[in-house]
Length: 431
Image (cartoon, rainbow, N blue to C red; front, side):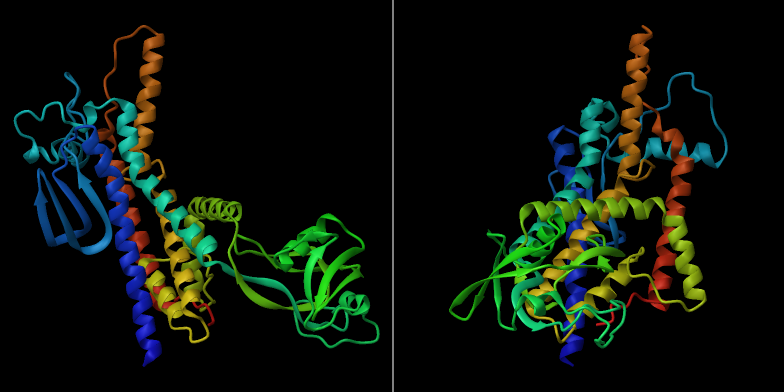
């Protein structure tokens, strides 16, 4: 029963975190829009029927029934058709005109100069980049809170056990044989209970620092060891072995690394700021890489689900899948409260990095599409000035509405496919 309650708590934690992240994103659009004098009739979290709303000034703030995103309404998102422009017919023409007329019911006397499209290009870009930036900022704050504030488990410098040999395999459990080399720690005289305080005179906080030093300085090194009340200097020559190593991106690679032959006590330790920023950069880079290969990833997920293959835990996931993972982590009886909180914060950080990266795709209706439109307009105006031609006016991004509908449709289909896969073949952490 207790595990069920923890599971529900984990799902609620991540659900509230996602809701906050969406609202925070839209706030990134709302604040600069109001600062620049744009009329904003609505600020909404979610889509569909309105669950709750309140009007403050000229803006209605509310929550809708389907929590899969959010939006703010700005008048004049698209410019009117240019005088003398050729009349279009069909669905494409209707969608273009609908985009131009959208939110026209909110335009009143005196609002003529409060249209989005009339802003200088840099202000429009600031408004559209504001949302992704807020997710990027929140992701960094959550990462720093978890890695620096709460910390992560790492190998301490306290030895709990000594390996008798250099194993012949690191991919499976094997017993020592007479043919195996004696473990470096055993040769050096290290014992269980020893605490390593320094390497070649340099103080160390954890075993990762010792490994990094040994990697950069191959050969014999000196370990400053505290054994009870006695301090010793022991010489050790780590063996260089090829073994699986998990990178910061979560990938497992075989690398040549120094092997000491010790089992170490795990310890929760605060990470440094630079490591937290490097981790964040790696997550963002991995997210962009995943987006670039998204069609292939989805195809492999669908194929794997059909054939009953195990799900790749590093692949794309729906909001349902995120909730499942959060519940599984929260209900793990072996995890402490700090473990669960740290994991939850890191999940929300990754989601915010994903929202940042996804919204930077230069396609409408995503924020990156509006930013790309502003950059295109700036380049076009610069070329027109160089050619001494009259100002061409704002870029008519309303003409891209047919493509926008296609992109929106594909995003809906993608969301549904991921949701179904998460229900049929959920990600399992094996806890």
